[in-house]
Image 1 (cartoon, rainbow, N blue to C red):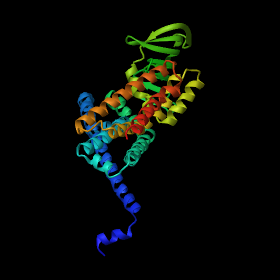
Image 2: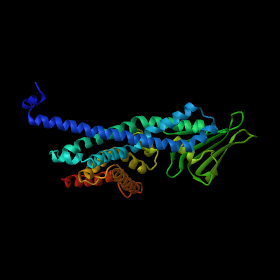
Image 3: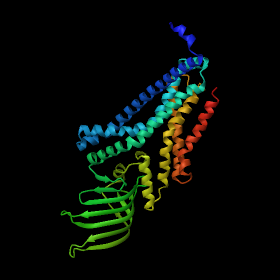
Image 4: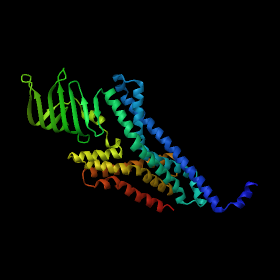
Length: 377
């Protein structure tokens, strides 16, 4: 039976469904292609800049080529996770920008293809990017970044630093062992400090305990200090109480920041447990709660940004092809990040509740996307 004869046996609605399936797959495939291309370009730029910036440190430290490559490779999952929202937005805008330039959108709309039908593959692409981002943020990135930081500290900077799962920090230098219960990278403060000093026979000669300390100049200004120092004559430990004491701990905030995972480098569960521990020890964890809610909000950037991109495409704002699409995408992403950072700052300052600070930009942008889509037809 010839092809045109088959048409008499196929219901028109079935033909429409088949046609929409083909169109949907085509759009999804194009978005995926440009998404991968954008990630490759961004990663190439990042690795090149980072390599040029740090290769001298690796060469001076005599780090092997294999360890150097491992360091740069293990940095990639975190970078991919961070640029995924931008990548999926640009992919959507480029796809529809080129379709508009080639009059494909006009042809589809003239054939009766609805806006909802065109938005479907965009939404599914956003959901896929969101799931991909969650998998990276919760499973891969925390492990690889931790390993990369260990290479940088131990192999390149030659610092003996160990962190436990509870984020206690142990540091070793020539004659000291230092323990820090909690380090806050934002304020450059340490809490629960204990330093052990040993002689050449590895006999304890001094123990310093401080409630907290802050980095000022090139040393640490500690408060509520107890110093136990061994008397060589009596071989006993003499105890001294000091309200404050300036001490050189042989480690800078930069060293500690590399040792302690930043909030964006932790998984949701790791950060949640960290907050519980900080609060259990009597410290303020409001800032970390803002970051915790941000971890739930950031993956939704993918969906929100793709819907905004769909609204712009449907309203014919990106008819001039690739250059205009990229310009729109970068502008939207920049504005989105500025508003998000501003809300986060208000959350850190206690002006906004943590949930509102993290999710506010998503709600505002969803309203904008809805307005663009509703008024597109």
